[in-house]
Image (cartoon, rainbow, N blue to C red; front, side):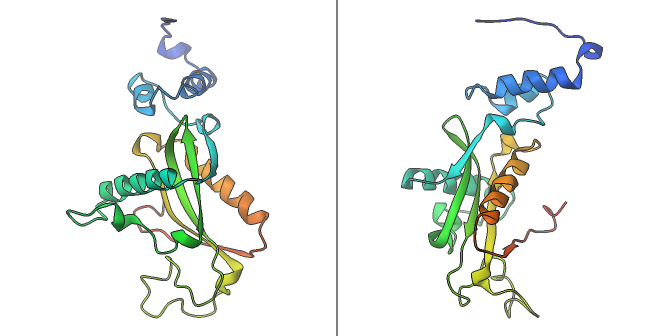
Length: 188
């Protein structure tokens, strides 16, 4: 079915645009790039995605590909790097939350649940002497790390949806603290 509609700029309300974009994003064959190229602003899209934890080795490999693409685009990988460069030391003790658009993983985040205070977390790895001052026990924390979204899916509310899921996990856990970090570029 092909429907051709012409909506003049002044007739396009924010509500109408949001509804059209929401409808288009339910079709996994329609990329965010296509929607943007058609002149729509992609802001409220999170309801088109489903989130859950990685279940299979194949899904984990897709997470590594997503991380690789994000890190390469940010200039965080040396020339000639392979997927092994984005395997996180704490992936084995992490639950990796992913967002799917259809069958495609479009966002991921590692949530580490340290079972010992001796574990070196991603957030402390760059610090020469570890955490300085009084820090909570690591066994009371969930570390949020390696958050990545596919380039095409940035600029909307997908990141907010990921944080909502992180909070749900945190609120239902026995942990007291969330810990994370970012670089100056991503801080805003």
